[in-house]
Figure 1 (cartoon, rainbow, N blue to C red):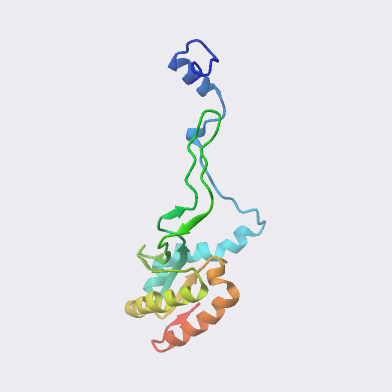
Figure 2 (spheres, rainbow, N blue to C red):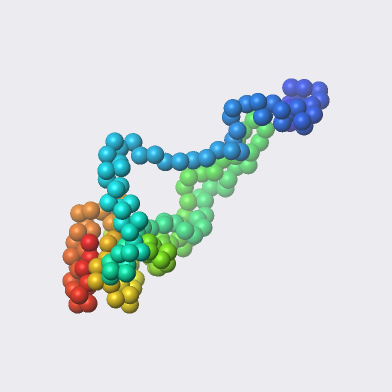
Length: 184
């Protein structure tokens, strides 16, 4: 590429590699991470981490630790505009607008103690869809397992917002009460 751009008349591949090794920027070795900026993060995370660490022992005591969340738009989407290919001096472009073509939302739960995953797909990602997931997947699985208590770990997403989740947990607790189970 340097030759075609007229930067140099000729260049060896080993020279390019030597230059790349000398640079601190190595895009092929890029790693992403996420770090909380909340100074109370460890204090807030501690109860969840303890649940995870004790999940197997808790399950033997009839307490099921479950982590639930959703994965949105898991199927292909069709762009409104055709992507524009990269050209010399211009990056490729992909428009942000798209049509949903059968995209679904996956609601899934991980049983922390044994690594089993259960889920269901819904056409939308709403609190009512999360309720359907809990009633049709989690509660029957809890009854099948014969647990007396479910410790449900959720993030603060809108699908299971704290204000709404209290209501659903009381509903679930009512269903679970029939089987002498308790939901946290």
